[in-house]
Length: 446
Figure 1 (cartoon, rainbow, N blue to C red):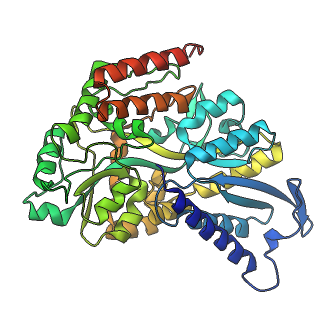
Figure 2 (cartoon, rainbow, N blue to C red; figure 1 turned 60 degrees about the horizontal axis):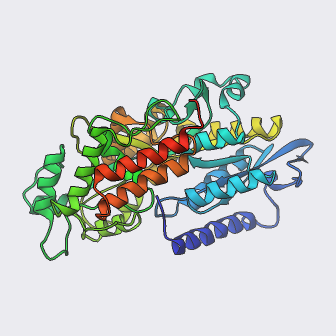
Figure 3 (cartoon, helix red, strand yellow; figure 1 turned 90 degrees about the vertical axis):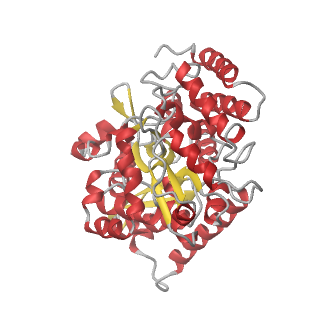
């Protein structure tokens, strides 16, 4: 889910410009919700109290996502005169998590942050976040809490409580170039692993000028590999946060297929493929198919000069994908701020705003009600690709999330990369990864 550092700078600059313009727009009179705030987290405006919230958010896919977040926050501030949210673009997910952890240890965490849904156990173990259930109950919002797609809630709940709210959620999907498919005489996207190989071989040119397939393998390689394990009948993680299944025979078999795609079947480049490179290779015609986040849909549709198809990831025993992306976390602060943060989370995930966010980005709208809005119905009538990731949710399983989550994820990513680059066999790489993960998780009882 990475993005080149230079791109981050550009996005940050653009976001800052949006903020500056928003602050200057409208002439000399400041918007009502920008007046009367104080640095201490509360203030007064027009005789009422204003609660100040800080909101950290990352960007993980190409496109003007940061500006869209800032626009959403501005709309919230405009419609909630007693709450002022200050949004801070904080790089990618990894750098945002590092910033948040550092700030928490220093006693100044953000009030709300978008972080990976899989960061739940790390944040919970730190004692940094509050469960949302009690806040929602006090606000009479239990129906709202139950309105999200169940697949997303698998990475939101633990120990009988809900610790985060789905926001910019995604799955991996298969993007394919319909024009290249037609030229190759292929009538539909692959449905199975065998069809994936056969189609990719037809679409690969021997001189390397066109690859049948590209699956990113840099960065969060565990997430890009995880669909194959699920499709082969065994996820790498279950309900327990202290247990993984890296060396299960079905997971080993899945990694062998993952490795065979570039090395045995020769349908994608050898070595590691950068996360940010794959969409560019796809939109420029260098790759006929890619696996990538549904959150890349808007940018791919904007950049591609050909007919873009989106499909489920091909199956082995079953269709499958892990969910991915970021959730909203509310940090332990004061009752007043936590209440205001809940209001902000409810507003961001309301049907109209969830639909708007999905249509502008490609992220999956997080509730079925968002798909009942007229705006979303009109959008899907013109852009049916936007419904694929939602429909694939029925086959989705949880993303790898455990205690010491980032370290465990890195262990599996390293194992996948070692196998892909020929340093170890898939079996040995996963055996070693299992031992390392077991050792790390042994201090946790559940």
